Structures are given as structure tokens and as C-alpha cells.
Length: 585
Image (tube, rainbow, N blue to C red; front, side, top):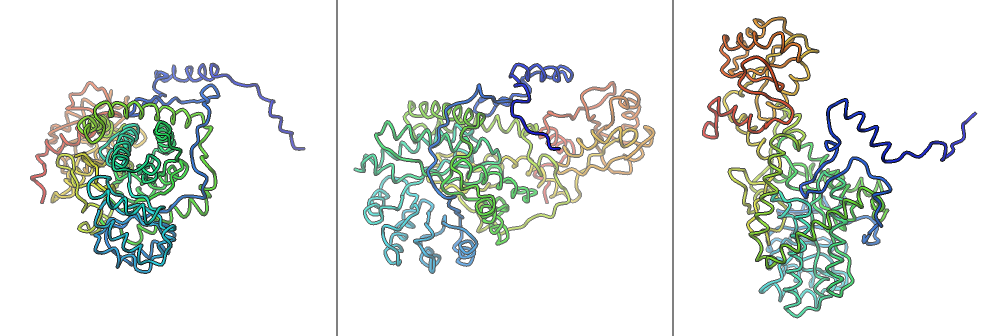
């Protein structure tokens, strides 16, 4: 007999009851409730639980549409790659190619079916207008964006485009430079709003009405593997733009182009980028983006190959055609967590926008913007360095045996003009670069990847010996942790395996040829064996001895543990071994 489900069979639980149960568990671990609260780089506190008490009135401005536009970027004039994309499901093209190549590249492309977005060149915009004139397409059917900066001679091109092709947008408000410099979500939103307002001023100052000026703009935002924050960011962006439109006396909906983040992409273990971009694309679609560009997994290395491009477009095809994500308008609306996060992001971004405006707006306040984003990047760098913000395949779970992915860098995304931070190699960016305000372009993985490059450049991979104490069960947890940490810097980590004495550990250390050892064991084995093992290791030639953990009676030279300054330890280890960039082959 099947039991009948009765909705009211279980008593309702209150937030206070949940908190009491949580506090009881936390007391056993010594942790506080604050340890369950996550603070973002915008200072927003994300709670571990949201209830009906956190409910806000849903604020949805997502347009009614079927799916989103699958937009692929091309940085070299390759007609074969372009046609492969179009035949494989791409519905619009983002072209960062010389103006002289446009006519040949677009030969055979149905421009009424595949809108073209350019990359900010006035010459390319003029060439594109000539192509539209000659193409068998009605002027009213032309879509896309010339991506011009509304100043100087470009204003004449914008006027010409509007008079001849009323559905063609001409200006992109590119927020990617703010994200690619390491900025936070509210900084990206607020700075892009200030940039958009500066464009509105230029357009209206050139004779456009407010409504006409708004119609020229399309926004470009970064989508990251932080799913809910990306959803909330796009929702907040529409709310912010609606407010600007309201005070301008215009009714409009923000047009959004989401691009999977360049900053989150890795050169090491690039296959993981497929997972990152899938989550980012999912979030962009759920957040209501009108167009989405998924960067190929090898974009940080060089020119993507056909396999990478196919995976990138099929990521979108799967989410649209098989998962049907585009068939629900604003699916996150009503979520207590997402609504709260949307509201908080919008509030922080609006405050930042007002601060920029008080400083004279953009571009006058570029120094303020650069300093604010640099401060955020410093905070983010600190969390990346101690692996509080882990990067799978790089700072966590690195694979030293991975086969390098090689791509043509001369023609890839990295060939764009860039301003890397410090000694960092050029990093990928897919922004137009028309309004970067001198901001650097960074990747979250770059510091660890530089160490990996340094290790690979040595005649023999540098080693750190894991001095494991006792049976495998006693040392595997800390040995795994230590191996993971030093592998992230490119070090090989031979280990002693199961051992029964300090002498046995020391003998295997000698056989390893290493100069540095890390004790790995349990608290009990440290109490019984650490002192003797450290002495035996030093007698065997160990020049530096560390311990995986936080305390010991043995005379060690340092500790590695969860939350330790991993990047600093790795860098100092290279310094101790006398290896620096001058030692590369």
C-alpha cells in the first residue's frame, strides 16, 4: 500500500531552530558562525541560508526572447573557420580583423541572418557600411554593432549608419577591461555605467536625442565560473541601466553581450577551461544575456584550433537545444539568494558610479578607477596566493605530467596590444581596447603558472622530498596536501612511502637527490618521531626542513598548512635553490 503524501505532515522549522542546530555542530569544531559567511570583493556578505524573511519583490527586466545569440569571435581573417562556426550553430560574428579583410571574409555570409559586431575600428566600420550597401539585404534588416567610440570622426560614421541602417547599433560599452584588470563585480558594473553615461553625453552633445543615443548602445560584460554572482550581475546591470533611462526620460531595456572571462582562463591544464566556460555560459544565459561568447578552452595559449572552437559553440548549442535554458524568462527571479545578491550588487555599483561621477566621470576619473581596481586586484592576489581562491589544475590538483597544449601565438588573442602587470606574460583579452584607461590585463593563474614555467625551463625538475612518517594511513593526508602545494609551483615531490624509523626516512631522502624535505605525518607521529627524523635528515644533507602542519618540538625551518602563504613559500623555495628567471635555458 502506498502512503499518501500530506504537505502539512511535518512541523515548520524556524530560522532560530536551524541556527541552534548549526551552533551546536560548530561548537564541536571550535568554529564560529562567521566562518559560514562568505564576503565578496565588494564587501557583500553571503549568508549560509536564505529564508522567506529575506524575500524581495522580484525585479525582472529581461526581455521576452527565445534563447540568446551565439556569438563567436574571430581575430584572424580565416573564411574556413568563420564558415565552420556559422554552419555549426553560431548566429552572429564578432570580428577583430583588419578592415581590408572584411569583404573577402564575409563573402557568402547571409548578413540578414548573421549580425556582425566589429571591434572599434573606424576604418572597419566604414568598410562594413559599404559591404551592407552592396549586400542583398534590406536596410531595415541589418543588425549588429560597429563598436565605435562616439567621438571625433567616429560620430560622422555613427550618424551615417543611423540614417541608412536604423537597426544597426554603433557603440559598445565594454566593461571587460575593468574585469580583466582584476576588478570586482560592482566595480565592473559601476565603471561601465559611468562609461555609458559619458557616451550618452557625447552622442546627445553631437545632436542625437536621448532616445536615439540609448538605441546606439550595447553592453559587454564578463561571465565567470561564479554562477550565481554572474546571474546577479547581469540582472543588476539591467536594473542600473533602467534607472539611468528613467531619469533621462527614456524607456529602454539594456542589450547585453556576455563574454566568458579571460581573467579566469588558464594556460596550464587548459582542459579545465571547458568546465569554467560551461558554467559561465550557463550563468550568462540564466542571467538574461542577449548574446553570449564562449571563449575556446585554449584561448589563453594562442590561436584556438577547430576542435576548441567546436567545443565552444557546442557548449552553447547544448545549453540552448538540449537543456532548453533559453525558454524561461529570468529563471532566477524570486530566488531569495539571487534577489538579495542582485539588490546588493546594484546598490554597491550605484555608489561606485556616483563616486566616479563626482570625480568628473570617465575618462576624467580614470586615475580613481585604476586605483580602486588595483586595490581589489591586490586583495584578490593575496587570496589567490594563499589558495583561499583555488584554481583547479593550477594552484590545486596540478598535473606535472600534462602534455603542453601548443598553439600559434603570433595570430592568437595574445597578439592584441596589452599591458601586463609586472613581469607577467601577455594575457588574453577579448575587449576592444578602445577605453582601457591604462588598466593592466591579468589572469588569476598567472603567478603560479610563471613558477611552473620556471620549473620546466630547468635542466632537471627541482625536487622537494616528502619525509613521510609511519604507515600510509598515518601520513597520506598531509603528504597529499604537501605534494599538491609544491606541485603547484612545478616541484617534483618524491616521497619515502611507508617508513618505520628516522634512519629509513633519511636513507630515502639521500636516494632522492633532493636538498629540501617536508615532514608529513600525523600529530602522534610528530610527537614520537619528528625530532629524531629532523636530526637524521640534516645529517643526511637536508639543507632545509619544513613540516606539514602548524606545530612541532623539532627544529624545523618552516611550516606548510591550509591557509599558509603558498605562493611566497614556493617563490622562496626557488630562491633557496638559487633558481630564478636568469636560470632559464
